[in-house]
Amino acid sequence: MTTPSPSPASAPILARAGASRGKNIFAVASGKGGVGKTWFAITLTHALARRGRRALLFDGDLGLANVDIQLGLMPKYDLGSVVAGKLTLNQATMRYEAGGFDVVAGRSGSGSLANIPLSRLQILTEDLRLTADGYDQTVLDLGAGVEKSIRSLAKCAGTILVVTTDEPTALTDAYAFIKISAVETAGVDIRIVVNAANSTREGERTYNTLLKACQGFLKISPPLAGVIRRDTRVREAIRNQTPILTRHPNAEAAIDVEAIADRLLAG
Image 1 (cartoon, rainbow, N blue to C red):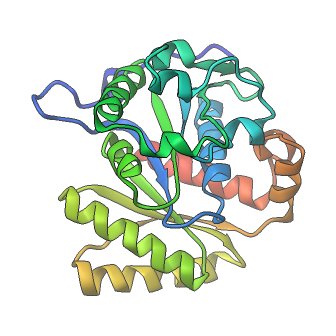
Image 2: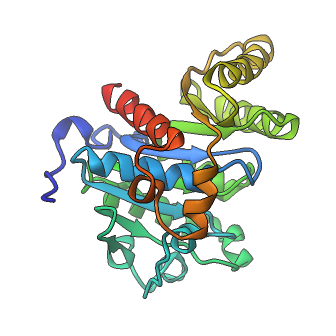
């Protein structure tokens, strides 16, 4: 499939001095691990590529990266070389032909990357903005939590997608991430994704629980990006290191992520 060149409408907002957020960058975040964040980031990127978008998936989990594992990749270079100053992000980018998108792999099992110096982190975020300028959409799979490196990378994005489930700890930690992001950056575009819901209606109820907390304590109303229904084929696809849109494109969870992609592209 021939991928189109980036359009001016989707280029990052870098023209103004001090501007840092790119409209074409989606950061996928969560307050805690185990909510399906990386799976969602992979599937969203794949869905964007299937819509003819030139897409990049950036594994920004600087301590427990696993995008390459879920995709069955063995990258020659990874984010560790970029952080060490040996390569640029562009040089560390690899093609995932089966999905039609590019990948910057993280470094699995290297917790030291989670505490990189501020100077290196600033260089990495600037390199990310420049690299994203060559794509229609870039999806950042951020680490779980609210650490400095995660917040810094999130600030590159025009939209932050906070993934949660109906578990009380997931909701509490998602709220904590939203609170810190809203305090640090006024007017940030935060949207909520409810994953592994027993039904669309139950997912909406989970969203409303989080929304009420945000409205009551933060005075903001982050919209619902979408609900992803619980689907046993998700785990099966992950075990086989194959994207669900390749292995089970008609699965309910796959259809739900494609709907989210359509809404994001529509604005």
